[in-house]
Image (cartoon, rainbow, N blue to C red; front, side, top):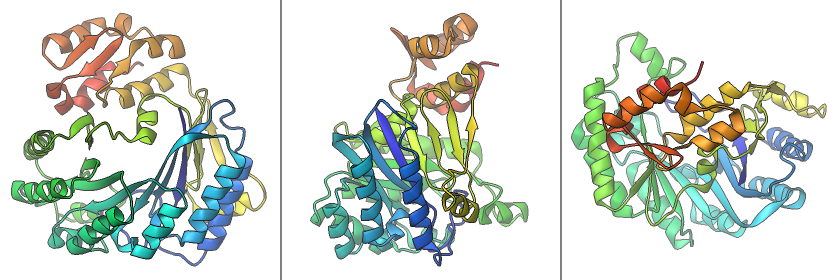
Length: 375
């Protein structure tokens, strides 16, 4: 079930925690959209056999693009690529971009899933992390999206900010549940070195929550969301009534995907490809008709580790037959003793060909997955 990812590398302002590839310089926006459009024309054969079942516009902030530019990219995909009849088209959006007029445009161009970056429902936290919207604006954007006919909405939250409390977390979870979105992604804040928060941490202005406190926060959010009938189908992702992110599920289950735009990654089942994460070099190269990408002909062990890392985070777990058939890796033979130890300690279960983390195991996911990697 192949997917297409389109990276829009623009934001109005920099969130203090973010280390994704983006620019706040919108002066060359038109030129960038033309470069992405040209890459779409040049990448037609990267995935040859499967139709796209998902299109995901991410960033950056793709909702920052005017409607005609978004429509241009989607029309180009529809015209040139093989796409499934039931197509999930997701747009990442900031609340401050979602006017009633913009929402009507998004709906008319076929976008049927919104991922709204709310992050918090508390103004002092939004200001602390340098978000452009307020809590009231976030709620209004969500309600307007519902009135515009969007029936599949995901919202993003972040927890364990420096200095955050359990009551901060409970407030945000209660507010999210009250809106009743189909999907909620809740990410633990990690202070990355090349961010404002990273700079502040080096200067001693902030510090990350102690891991015991962060684990307690994680327990609070899992209990609250599962009590409200949200299924934790991936460590950071929860949904109601089977509204999984089809696009992200493809990543986690070893499906091929094409990524276009600066900094985008691709995988066609045989090798990985990484576009240059530099806007000017990306545009200059595409204007010469060259996709500025580095091909990584990774060995099977490396690809197997990628699959282990992604799949064990999900409720479906790791399919040992995929490891065996696709990567010539018998994980039960290589790590049989470790796997048995994790099972006996209640961190892992084996169901047929699947290895699945238990609820207890999810708390130690990084350690368990690291121990099962192959050298």
